Length: 149
Image (cartoon, rainbow, N blue to C red; front, side, top):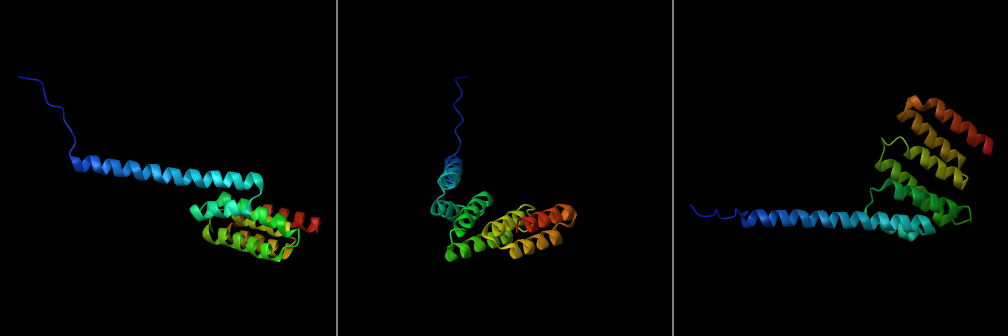
C-alpha cells in the first residue's frame, strides 16, 4: 500500500467557509467602527460622530445615552432645536427598549438636565407602571428632583 492521498474538502464547502468567515470579518469591522465613533464622539463632545455611530448600529443603547446627554447639555445653552432632538432620542430609546430597566431613568435624567421636571416625572410614572418593585427608588428620585427645583 502506498501513501494515502490527503483528504480535501469539496469546493462548495471551502466556498461556504470562506463566505462565513468573510461575513464575520465584515460584521466585526462594522461593530468596531461604531464603537470607535461612539468613543470619539463621547470623548470630544461631538454629537455628529455619535449620530454617525447610531446610523451604523442604531440599536446601541450606550451611544444613544451619550448622544442624549450631550444634547441635553447643549440645551442649557438655549438651543430649541437641540432640545427637540434630545427629547426624540430619549423617546426612541425607551420605545426601542421598553423592558430595559435603565432607559427610563436615563430619559428622566435627560429631562432634568434640560429643566423639564414634569417630563422627568412622567418617565418616573412610566417606570413605576413597568417595574412596580422599584417604587421606593422612584419616590426617592422624585424627592431629589423636587429638592433640586
